[in-house]
Image (cartoon, rainbow, N blue to C red; front, side, top):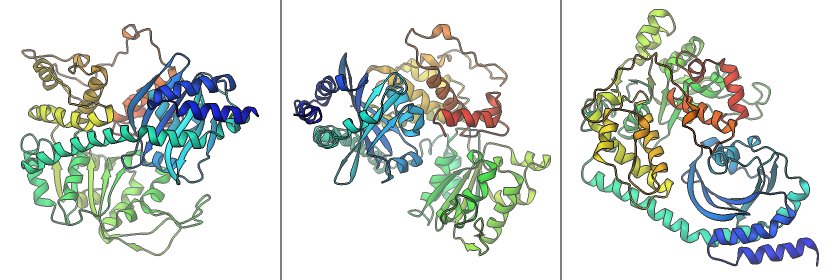
Length: 512
């Protein structure tokens, strides 16, 4: 009997040897290890409906464990995974070569440096991947890929059967979360948390303007939830059920603004192999949300003014105007009136946009909403983090949350809740990492000039690769700046690095 046939039989038997997938995976790795320079094996599922990767199980020479970690994906990452031309077996000599793989492994297996992956499919349904990983780069070659390829059927079948019950449990957790939201709706609570408290004035403005077709300008600090309010306007309008297209104007390079916003014709430039619809065309019939509008260069502002005036666009490389039926909702954290005075924003565009301004207060101006927001975020995060029930929060910790300065507003709060839930290990949440005052202590003033100090003396002896830490810090900078890279207040400015250098490093680390 050949080596391949013998190994195939042994692997199939071990994968079928236990209903506990981590136990079966450990036995399988014991059979595979003599033939591959691998340090471990893992299985991940792709969940297209929720745009997530579910890490299922991992095994190495020391043992195995079942995982229930869900990692959110961008729409672009989902498209990559669903590409029919994505290879059945692929070798990554460096995990940075594939943005999806690096995004997932940096959070689940940061020690992995190279992998050989096998797509798991049944009836043309992409289930996910089974992969062998090594802690050094360039561990695998084509011979390993050819040998691993033969295990597609047993890995796919066993994964599908073994995970059916676990997916049902996860679905039940999602249903429980949805039922809590439904009960809140039946009780008459608004889906915008704080609508009856700190956001009462804002929601009154939303209810007034939503049924109309007027352009809306939403202002407020970074992280206050401008997208939530824009979505609330769309959902209460006659356009609900139609496209709601979100555009981060600060994240589009100047050279790509026209093609991204207005689309292009086939042959308009090198690489334009077919016609592409821009964001405005994608929003036709619905609402387009232009976030961080103040980051648009003056040249793009001129073309945006024409769109607002005529409701038509011309694709790059085209001549015929395309008529649009859209509603425009814009948002910015910058003072556009001041930018008009300095010549950084067109006055005529400012008047077109400022028809109905809505200003969202910062989180430190509506502290009464913090308990509601914390509970809301826990309900959202619980299914993804594998919580069977919501964790407890002490009165002292809730007071700590309400006394925190929240310079990052709601975005910072949800990150704090997620971090506390990850660290809780099933116990009560602990927010002492915020280093903020508790009851009876004054909230310190933030002069905006105090430097952030990174003190490695507080780190444990469990270190992570420098690239992982660098990527995490860049992601943190982008969260604080709302995804803005260049320009005043952008990540490049705050990190004191040239925007092109930052983009280059982000691309190398798989963040672009």
